[in-house]
Length: 74
Image (tube, rainbow, N blue to C red; front, side, top):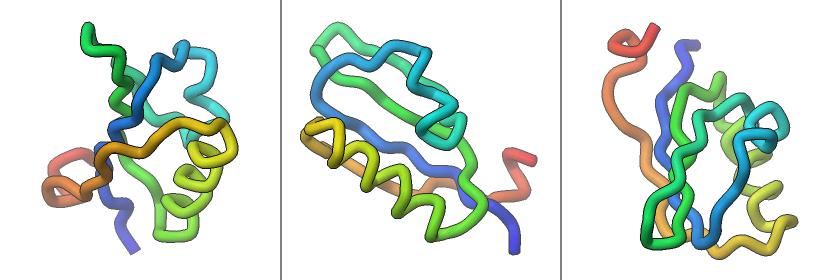
């Protein structure tokens, strides 16, 4: 099974140090006070794990979407 690329937007800013704990997703902070996590995850259980960690941090989830074809990001 090929990994899919996800984009997850949360309210609040996360430092880059959270990336390994959040599936090694790239962390981008914007000026509106939101953080965008993006990158490939190997499967749905990994996605659910990241979403559970976001919940455990108390960060409001604003958006989650799967983007592109996994072959585009290999």
